[in-house]
Image (cartoon, rainbow, N blue to C red; front, side):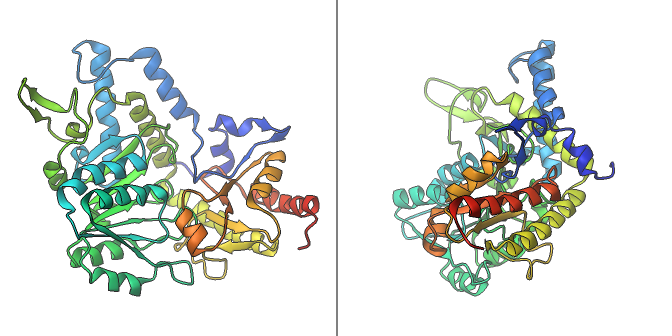
Length: 416
């Protein structure tokens, strides 16, 4: 493992050398999607140039090579999250698709009229809407664990709502708005003690620090390749082998079958039972290359780098007069929040902040961040600005973004 050097890391990402609006790109929106290193781009290009073929269908050389690459990708993912085997790794389009797969398969088979699904107030739409649709179909109900005043989950409220006997507890490991890192191991253990099955949305955690599926003991885990250096269109549903065996397939077609007659069909072994049709082979190859890149730098090193950036950014934004929505610098202990920082500037709409920063070459997010219930109802805000970091960001980029808030005030005629 090489020593972590952010300036060397940046050289591996071609897009970081471009200019936008005549200024060098400063990319502070990795919570939405990460940039891609050359190794990922080259791996995908190499597939198309040298062994583009359908997997599981040919005994000719390039088809065999493509099949091996696809399986190697699953083995890499399995080791990365400490799953028991690649049988527990189902490829989907993204986190949203993975959660919907659970709702449409496990949910349809296990949720009945009157059952409770327990979520939290801090969830992304992808971990709310599928359950709303399921609850409507099954005449089930949804309850939400409240957010406490310190932007963490209200664990007393969670404990009370577990007493209602939910069938499923589904929650985000890290909030994409607040950056709060939830204690996944504790939340899962409490759910299991009350007889609930657990789904962990790891979209905002797995790219940034080590996540151990066995240690957490979640029944399902969902995450996206595009947030962890891989391409878009590839996501992962992890599920315990025993649960996947019992789940019916959601989509039928080629490759997910063992046999087909005019009257009925039987299903392929895991994980292929859930992967009908031609898969996103290039996406799987790109995801493996992304994980290989992360492993080459070490997740502990990446987490430490982001911890330093987060502390620096929180202090800088607070000093600049921004209001932080999430754990602030005084309460930040390095482990309780991630490098996702939502904020507002008094008198400035987040869209104006984002537009003005864009003119300076700085890419940040603004809006409801696919978490309208949290931002609109719980936080009582129409929208928030958000910056987010990854292994390629620097303190100098944070300085530039914070300095540009002065430009925002000047243009809008605001006082600090």
